[in-house]
Image (cartoon, rainbow, N blue to C red; front, top):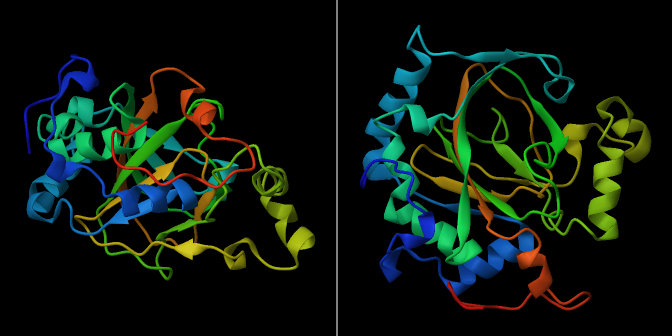
Length: 257
């Protein structure tokens, strides 16, 4: 991994073209609202896991314990500002693999929106991540899952296309998923059976998704490990302004307008 976390603007970091996403990866992400990059951090995974466990294993580290309706009132442990507090993980903010992904999605001008570390002892019902940012402000989440995950033990599930937040489809999902207890009455099936893509993953994979993308996790096992790096567009509404209403998503290359 590269140099430690600093306060310098992210867009000053140079990145080799080998770390940029391909046009196919960008179009997949912008069409469906998520992307998995297998094994991108496989060579660093032992250090990454050690850094994660060091944070949660530190008895002096403040940890939030929550039991929210979104998680069936079951336990979730959170450390906000996660990598910022870890000498091992802090370099990820400026790692060229991370910078390449973020610049490919957001362009050269973007902001750092902090990180979070999580231990899940729960499921997560369907939701977008609009608790952290208003829907009009475009953000991307880079997630590191540190366990082998599938649909049987809590892998993230995505509803493709739900990131188009102003369209009827997405508005309908957000409205109908606000109350987990009413989902079966509305759709005639349990939340875990709603049509979606299960994004199975292994430690070392990187999963990125739009904050607006509706996602969930079902059949979750004990102590599911996740930390995420969050980035946003510098000027709220800039990304949406480039998309022509009722027109297909345009194919593009990294750093193109």
